Image (cartoon, rainbow, N blue to C red; front, side, top):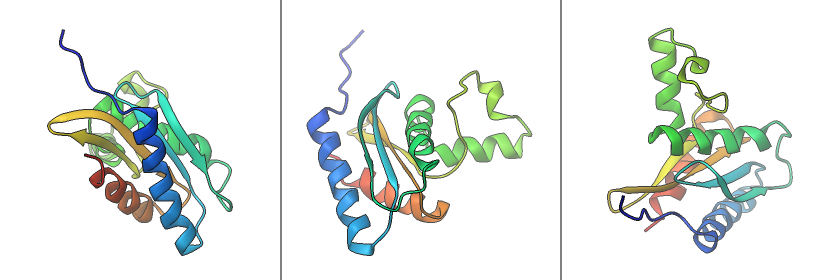
Length: 135
């Protein structure tokens, strides 16, 4: 089995910092989680003003995106359209809300980012922006 590249702590910290800068500039509070390709936490940030439940939700969004290899919202859309509860996927940590996005370098998923605490559309927008900065 070939060695897979995974996002490292230094990269994850930079990514979390970039998101934190945007949140701070806009006076917003949110949680930001970066996980490796297996969905395990590498870096995390909870800014001032972040809703308490968003701590776990951000991590779950990132976990879902990494494990399912697609945006967390896409899995949620599938579950809703097929009337197939997320619990049937066998992973209790999966969520179907938007804001979890895989981190891709080349054609390889190296991790994922999850953002929670803003309206879902804003979580998604910020997570997609952050993912687009990874190279």
